[in-house]
Length: 337
Image (cartoon, rainbow, N blue to C red; front, top):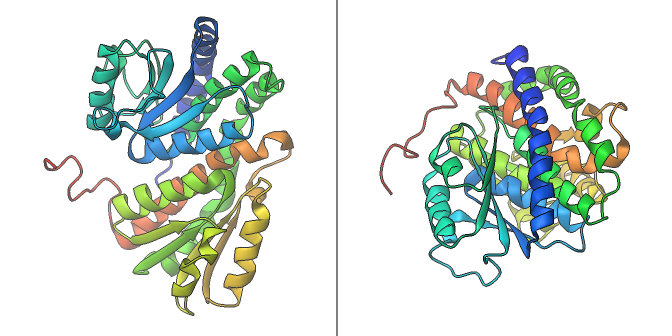
């Protein structure tokens, strides 16, 4: 596959899944110490992933208050919910993301516990953290989801709200094999998609439910930031309240069909779009999950499968067709702003 090292990918996932044992220990410690709420703080793609996990947990836990906000707000906005009894979760692959690091310094001064997932240690953010674990995955967000879900579901398990936790842990061990098989199956489709539509000047990407924030991440971090494609992302239900009016016969639209109860909204959007545009691409995530995974986990694992297919396979084939390196930036970390 284009720009894909299976051995490195498998190793990083397996190492990260092994780190979940440490994450379980952290969650157990936090549960014993007590907390008012769990606060996710991040920026960019990290914040999108966090919001997605909060969405999932809102459907699982009644006892735990989960919040996700921009790290940029800390020091600017005074949140009454964020206090010394909070546990703050942060993500930074670099370990020194500017906004996240600044927030961590403020939280440290206020004696607020920080649990961080960082790409390397020691790093500025890991040094400020109460607890931290390492995420070795250099590109992609699969491990971030796995780690955050493990932490949150363990908290719910400790509150007698998620009895299937141990089954979940057993199934995420299958993900290296499952995600690689999904990539192999999807790769020729991603290649053809890139040949047909990578040079479209405007992209519209639609999805809802548990993949809402991953659709946003793909549009913002991959298509806009890395590939410089003018893009809008929107949920399947909100599409019908404004955005549908800009779709014409030659408008490219990518629709991601999810695996939770909101799938009917994706199907509604699909039915409409088939009658309007000649440039509709539909990715049905159900086609890429095998029956080795418990169907009870399909919905909460759907952002992981989408990330593995879209932010990797589509991104790399688009990069090739556009002759545009995914690592090139005009402004990010190039100048002060």
